[in-house]
Image 1 (spheres, helix red, strand yellow):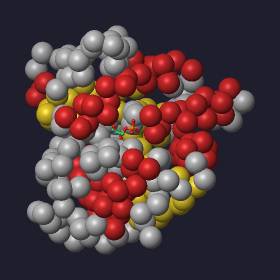
Image 2 (cartoon, protein in one colour; image 1 turned 90 degrees about the horizontal axis):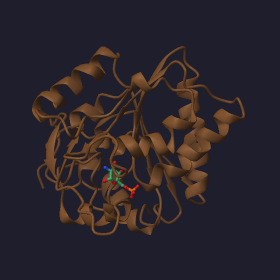
Image 3 (cartoon, protein in one colour; image 1 turned 135 degrees about the vertical axis):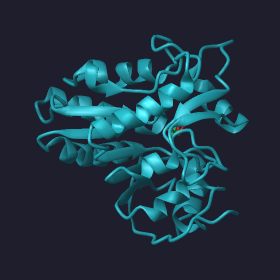
Length: 251
Ligand code: GLP
């Protein structure tokens, strides 16, 4: 285990009944951020955040929240998938959120996984986040191996937006989002751990027993690159919403 220096464990943990309750509570917290005159959201994909996006759409339709003054930056995108590939995170975000709320599509950013020069794309993505004034609230899920974004175990604390190789565990877990016979990409472009830690606030969601071990390692284990989510212990303004199943090992 390579330690990260200076862990201070300033993490607020809320345990809720189930995934729907996690989604509703997360919706309240995201709406607080959206109530500012302008806001920059850091968005995530994955099954865990789907109840949150459904709750945000319901709230928006009821007149309870507007995205008109928001910008968004997603954590990551698969390398090699064009934005109109149904499993791309761009298409996923359109389907789950963007097409159903009043966010300005021109201010929704994801890395371009099909860019010709991916290193230049990564640098430009970091610059775009900075130009927007940084991220106010970064949403995160967690992989069963402790990954955040697509920062797999071994990702350095100082990592920034870059191309990464996906582990077999992650590719297998995410194969459910691809059609039969389709291959899950082997690489992705992801915000780095240092990029994520620059967000002013972080909201991590975890649901289901498959996440129990990863959440326990992230919140109570040693801070180190074996569990990328353990880097959250260094941040100071993190809220974790977990359902009972995911919180089972928190003790
Ligand atoms: C993906 C995403 C992560 C996400 C994780 C968990 O690999 N890149 O941002 O947190 O998987 O996904 P799920 O919520 O589907 O379990």
